[in-house]
Length: 212
Ligand code: Z5A
Image 1 (cartoon, rainbow, N blue to C red):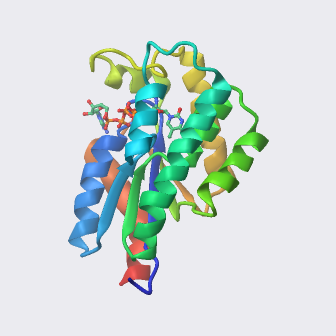
Image 2 (cartoon, protein in one colour):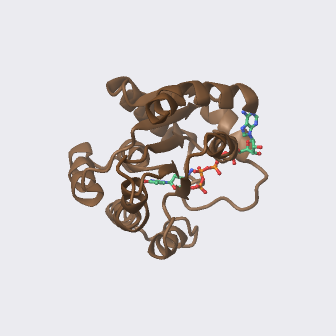
Image 3 (cartoon, protein in one colour):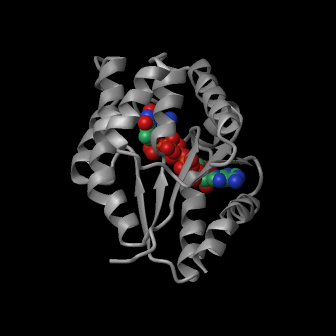
């Protein structure tokens, strides 16, 4: 067990924003600093969470109510916090997570219209105080994100939504970033992958300094 708690970094953004691409580069740089890292994703990251992921992204499950979708996202998150994130942070490891609670505010709140107060209640209960130290928001126009994601095969249950849904998602993310500037760093995701990585590493600099 380590005396120093690890750092928790989440990546957020719309479809095709480049989170997976950035994760690979970030992972390499963090490990080069000699920091033990756990990389995970939402929904998913545990056996229970991956089962939830299969349900919520299944395009055949058109019957899923917005309330059920929201609860399932938090069911996956509650498990991930207890099984993966909190034990890793407690052991001094860093956690790099592809999406976290902000995604529920953006997609289920902004996108589906679920009340923000209800999402906040669920966050308080399911996350038990675990919150990212830093959230990198990859901001990109819906059109560019969708163009990048096109041609990857069949769209999942959320990807089939209209552009207006993803515009609301983007607006909610940007509002959350503006409301919590100390936690969020918004990165222009229309830049090259190398420029996005450079901006992300600049945003991580204070975390590396705190660890040195
Ligand atoms: N969801 C939710 O509704 N509520 C929640 O609480 C949570 C999630 C946690 C997860 O899907 C879905 O769950 C997601 C939100 C919802 N639905 N949507 N839409 P996912 O994990 O399968 O997919 P995603 O999170 O949306 O990511 P993505 O679409 O796979 O994109 P990405 O990882 O951000 O992008 P990428 O794979 O790195 O890049 C996409 C393409 O662009 C690829 O060809 C790259 O080579 C290219 N790329 C990447 N970066 C660049 C740059 N900088 N320039 C040019 N091209 C680039």
